[in-house]
Length: 393
Ligand SMILES: CC(C)(COP(=O)(O)OP(=O)(O)OC[C@H]1O[C@@H](n2cnc3c(N)ncnc32)[C@H](O)[C@@H]1OP(=O)(O)O)[C@@H](O)C(=O)NCCC(=O)NCCS
Image 1 (cartoon, protein in one colour):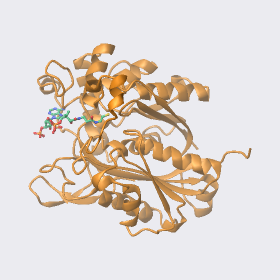
Image 2 (cartoon, helix red, strand yellow):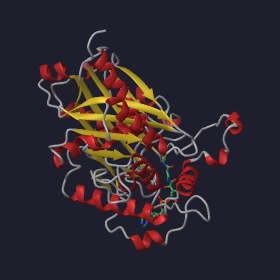
Image 3 (cartoon, protein in one colour):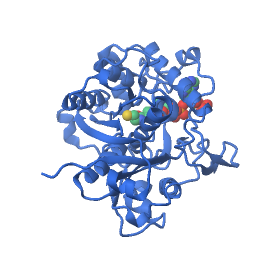
Image 4 (cartoon, helix red, strand yellow):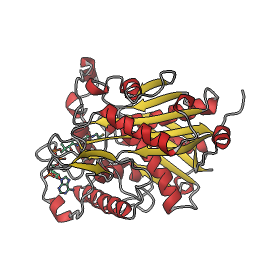
C-alpha cells in the first residue's frame, strides 16, 4: 500500500451564528443555501490562488436534509454559481455531520483521491426546524422507549443517570458565555467569521459579524430561576441547552504538496478521526467513546492533548464527556472550550462539527502557539459520536 499523504487545513470560515427565530433572528430573511454561498465566497476571496474548479469535491454536513435543506450540498454549490464539474456530497450524521464532512475530505486527500476539497456544514433551524419531516422507524420502539429519544429527553436522562447537578450545568453555560464574550471582544473570532447582511430585531439591515447568542451579562442567579425546558420536574433549561441556531461554515483542505505548490499557508493537519456509536437515549457520551477510541488507537492519553473542543449540546453533555474521559470535573475547564461553546455560540446542528475544527485550529494558533495536538469531539442525535485529532504541522 502506498503511504498516506498529509491533509492540511488551509482555511476555514463561518458565518456568525444567529438565533433561529422568525422575529428576532438576524438571518431570518435568508435561506441556508445563501449562507453557504457566503462562506464559499469567503473562502475563494481569501484564497485567490485557488480556483473553484480545482476543487475535487465538496462535502457538506446537514442534520435535517429536508425542505430548503434537501440536497443542500448540491443546491448550495450550484446556486452560488460555482462550477458544475465539482462533485458535491451531502453528509448526515446528525450533529457531527460537519465533522464527518471534514473527515471525508481529509481521508480522500490522504488516500490520494484528490488534492483539494471543501468540507462545509450548514443548518437553518428556523426554516428547517429540528425533526421536520422526520418519520421515526416504528420498530425503534421494540428496543427503545420513543419518549427517551429526543435530545431534551436525552439530556434529562443523562442528568439523572449520571447524577450531574443542575448548578454544575449552569456553571458550564455561565463560563461558556464569559469565554465566548472575551474571545469575541478580543477579536479572536474575526479571522473565522465572514460578514453577512442580515436584519436586526427592529428589521433594519445590519452586517452580521458577531454571534447572536452570546449573553453580555450572564447571571447564575437568573439561570437558577429558569423553568425546566423538557419536563416539569427536570433540570435542563433554555440556558443549559444549546439554543436553536442558524449558521454555515466551510473549510478548505489540501494535500500538503498541493498547498505548497499553490503557496497556501497552513497550521494544522488531520491526525485521524474515529466515529463511535452509543446508546441513543444517552447520546452525549458518544463523543467520549469516540475520543477514547481515538486516543487509544493513536497511543495517546488525555495528557498528550493540549486542548479540546467538547461539544456543548447541553451543559450536562459536556460535563459527562469531560468527566468520563478524566479531562475535567467542572467549568471553567482548564483545557477545553477556551473560547466558549455551543451554549453561548449556538449550535446549527450540521454546522457545528466543522466549526469546532475551525475554532480549535484558531485556538491553537492564537492562544496556544506551543500546542502540538488538539482534539475536537461531537456527540450527535441518536448516538453518533465523532472525534478528530489535529496536529500542528
Ligand atoms: C431549550 C429550548 C427548548 C428553548 O427554546 P425556546 O423556548 O424557543 O427558548 P429560547 O432559546 O428562545 O430561550 C427562551 C428565553 O430564555 C432566554 N435565555 C436563554 N439562555 C439564557 C440564559 N443563559 N440566561 C437567561 N436567559 C436565557 C432567551 O434569551 C429567551 O428569551 P428572549 O426571547 O427574551 O431573548 C431550545 O433551545 C432547544 O430545544 N434546545 C435544544 C436544541 C437541541 O436539541 N439541539 C441538538 C442538541 S444534540
